[in-house]
Image 1 (cartoon, rainbow, N blue to C red):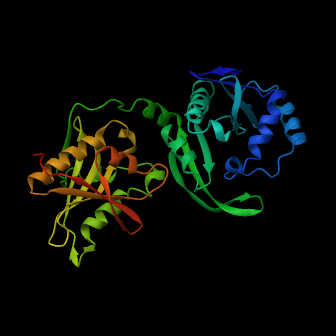
Image 2 (image 1 turned 90 degrees about the vertical axis):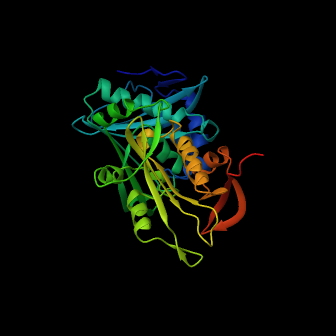
Image 3 (image 1 turned 180 degrees about the vertical axis):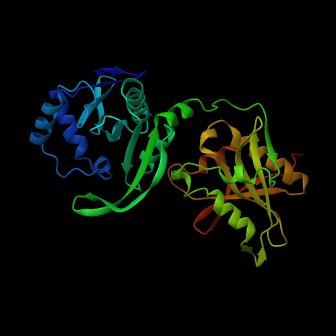
Length: 343
């Protein structure tokens, strides 16, 4: 018996009859239903019956699925689903939020509280979740809690009569403990480290979140690009790359295409911060170090490009002073950081 369960802003509780109209409304909202698999339209009668069945829920039940309400500022903001397998050791979760309560951190707070309760108060070994590959916001929610991407099931989910791809995420009890114990503050020292035979394997294991791979290539792709550089203006790009260390620990990778006769500005080709070390201010420190390096080499500017989309790096680069040039290359926006010394 765990309900009601309270967090800083939320109450996780059993559903009550007054929730039924709210649930009917948001489950019929195209923006909410887009990435879910319930049949449409959702009727008021079906929701009332469903709420009545769930009204006595006090927590997860072995061998069953239960639905839990998420209350925010006195209103139902959404609901969580949790199913325990017949052993009680593996939990599967789902979550739904009203459109007007999204992007407030409510989902991350609610799911995080549920996951921690499953590990702390139940004999749960593994928590799993699946989602539509296009649901970037949902992927970021899971990744922010330490879930790891485990692969894509091709045509593995039957959704409203159509077989769709399904992305799988999982979190072990030990994964969650390690995630909560990872470094969180700004490091005292950030340095660019030469990649050598003694550290290259460790560098190769660096990984961003799966949802970010559409914006930042993997380490395998980075090494491939460095080994067989692309042609820029008919001239092979010349890569300059370094590992990134924060307080002595390898936490990322950066690679620049050096300036050439056809490209007067160096190009920030790759900047990857490992998923365990993001949001520590490391990326901004790296760009400062990189700007100093290329300025010392005589560069008057540093260029970069980004793809648009939720979770992309555009805001990061704009905050650092990169300004779009108006060029579009391979579908990406090109931007430049002016390194001309002030007069």
